[in-house]
Image (cartoon, rainbow over all chains, first blue to last red):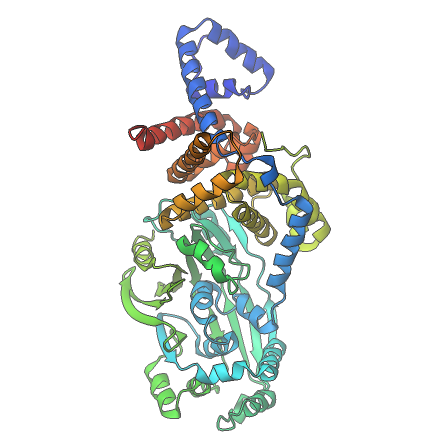
Length: 392
Length: 192
């Protein structure tokens, strides 16, 4: 061999990893007759030795490897079961059917504060084709009282589960390796922030579609049982079917993040570890088709009343919101603050939940028919805004 | 060397994907096969035993819930090593940002090792902390390749873990070692 070995080949030669033994021998012959290569080999060996010595400091003593494979697997199964044993209502919620792209905002901000089913129902009624984001501050006292009434909670859960008919169930999230692959898999153009240096963990969550048929009698019975006989569902609502299509969504996680498919609501003190986690989620607007005679505004009003608003307040709010084009985020009063911010060339909502130990935030906006959410723990909202403004 | 290499062959990814979806017994065998290496790697990297266990369990949870799509290119072992090193490096960076790790780390390490003298004991704890700091500062892939190679993985395994060609490992590894030393000297030699 007449050509010199490049640095990479010399390094591989040191580790006897230069392909087969013939390649190793050929390299050895060349080096033997090449003082320049000998010199560079010596340097590479010194670097490697030094790095090896330093990294060797990390090696644990054998007795500290305390958890053997079998007990570890028992722990793993325990963890897995914890994520499985969730009431149906929470499952529906976490399936990211309606909330696909908003998993972060909802899980971090809302699920912690109010029973998810009610937020879910509010969303369901409000969503047609999203063009903007609106926050409705609600007083969760009424819902909190209901939370103690597990019988009603269970019945609501059952009713929702039985009223939903999946045409396409949400599939398993899949890891993808680049924005290009994510775009291809999800079917829309995925944008990533230029402001972040690190490679994100990318997940594509397949979409879903389902229809929801109203059983008016049962729903009304539940309202009555919850002590809300003042709320009367319109008779015309019975047997009406609404269909919902949830597109594929993509999430990009930066930093150490809890598994999105796993249980985020029980992070507890572990939340601190995820202080640097920021998750960007993108999803084209879901579409909702309702029969023309369903009075969405009236239902939304009732939904707001159900959360504890007075009839007059509910009316004022619903009149101010375009329910066919707004993504409405019900936000418990006192639990979070929100402000309008200009990001990505449009107006978005920055929701912050201040807490001494684990503050949370979610930035939500809609651009060109795509809903974007950046959420995380910690006080990383300036970072989120920088990310939003550098999407490309 | 505390890292004991698994003698079994890596399971093919498509198999693991089926496992994760439908066959708990087969996922179990994947888990049992890869646990010792993944756990040991994280134990080396983050130092704290409880945190290493937690991160290793998290890596397997991700394998179970979000098996990789590119099942013809990567194997489960490679995928797990990549996820585990990422989790570990991010944990180190998290400590650094919170600026509380340094102190704790020193204490932890002092309590769990038994070198000959207090001076040695202090020196090794400090050295360990320095190494982690530098790894946390480096670009992820460079840090990963160093950790994987110096945990005893073959070039082919490293290539599978990082999704790069096996012929590029020598070059990447050499560069990573150079970068590591450069940063190390810049950070600590002057204070000497």
